[in-house]
Length: 262
Length: 260
Image 1 (cartoon, chains in turn orange, green):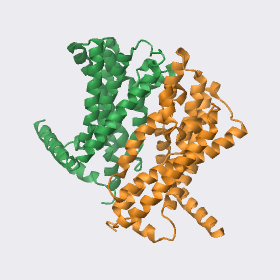
Image 2 (cartoon, rainbow over the protein chains, first blue to last red):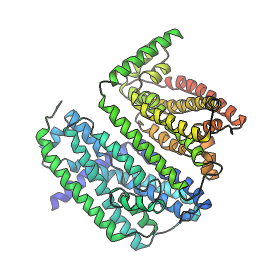
Image 3 (cartoon, one colour):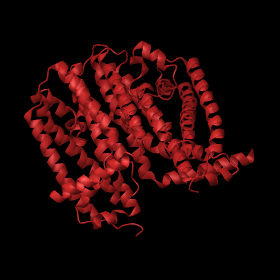
Image 4 (spheres, rainbow over the protein chains, first blue to last red):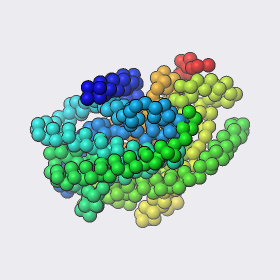
């Protein structure tokens, strides 16, 4: 137990140092997630003139929450893993007495810590510019949000890491991720809260993993009504499915792996 | 001039020959573009579904904006991103040295070295979208021709901004994702400018000139653009092109080369 703790600390510490090294890059990544903030403008304007069931200020809060959620659940493991497999750099990692995935987990988690100050700064700036939208979630909401955001990150990571496994068979596993991103973009609630979707599309979407990655956590943070039980069940279900698939592909893939270039 | 055209022909024929090695990519690109198109239409329909419309823009008119936006996406993934995103890499690895030694403008070399045919589906879908909306609106040939001028201005502005951002890597070596920020902001071009609150409009007109990329060409096509805006787009494009040239020359003075 003690040893696991020490390993975890070392891993996180090393990767944190890595991340802070490239601060400029990090700020740019934070800024490149500006899509929810752009759409916020369109929806605020639309809510002022049309019938969408939400007030302009709700849209402002929703998209800010979506921005925060996106910042906290960014995942890029498929690109790293693909490179490792193609260049054969996975081989030395396989010799270490620890599953290589923990390297990626550590780098993602510590990047969150390095990114957080910039993201919070932006959120502060936003409230300065638009003070009407300011709100403080209750403690219960906040704790629930923390739990859900961790689950959302886990789900997002599991899905992408499963796509990464395809790198054992083809050189372009990231193409799969890019294709998947399209659905993510339009169905996760990043471009609009599910409240404004047509009812049928909404029903279907709720069966997919997408809304639980953005819409669900964002709604909890700003206090929009959501079906908690269904949400948690869906997240756990999809996570379990992808975890199983991932481990299966990992075992098959290792047999396939030839350690090219190493 | 003739020499440059010859070189351009060589650049692009080799680039296409190289890319055609990966024909399966075309299928992926096609599917992605199709998915993107459907998603964009879906996103737009969320506004018009309840009877709301962007002030003064009917559904078909907004489709023109979306069509031009799709066209722009195709243009950037065909011509801009394969070239300009590599400037960073050239600086980082010091291979920019070889470019500078060539008896040809280095800006020309960096901007046109390759092209990627995978932006083609987006170009086609953009045209289809504009064609469909144009037919619904009963637009004639003159409408399309009239919009080509501001469209070219828009493309020139986009190129200039992109190139200048890429060129900043001479000072800050590791910023390969700076163009991602630009690309993120360009998403605002999906909707006509009136869809935004005043502060956004100001930002997307005068700070990041997204308005000149999609809204103004669309307005020109619908014959409602004021001449002053089109002239403004022209001045902006020429100014930015000139600034790019000057900026690149200035940046090169600080280039110290790496690992060579």
